[in-house]
Length: 79
Image (cartoon, rainbow, N blue to C red; front, side, top):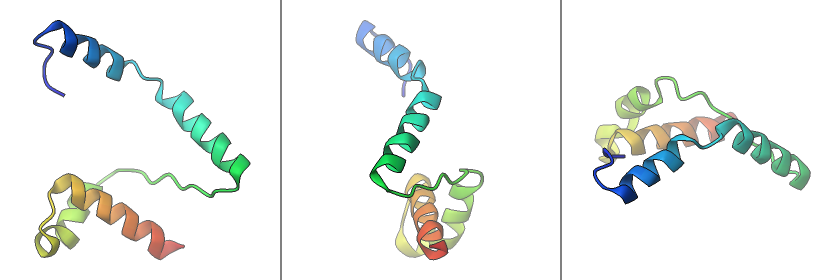
């Protein structure tokens, strides 16, 4: 997100940066357990670096897309 240059951007930045991620994660875990859906949390450490090395050039992905691709490939190969 960019710097808050006007009132609307400043308000949006404040909303985004005050989200309660712990409560969101706990709710996600609780609902998925209730519905019988298995979820796996993958630590994001080095995913963009590894994703770029493995898939960046061959699939013409940017850093963020390569990280997402790397996470999904590792998750589904482990299952």
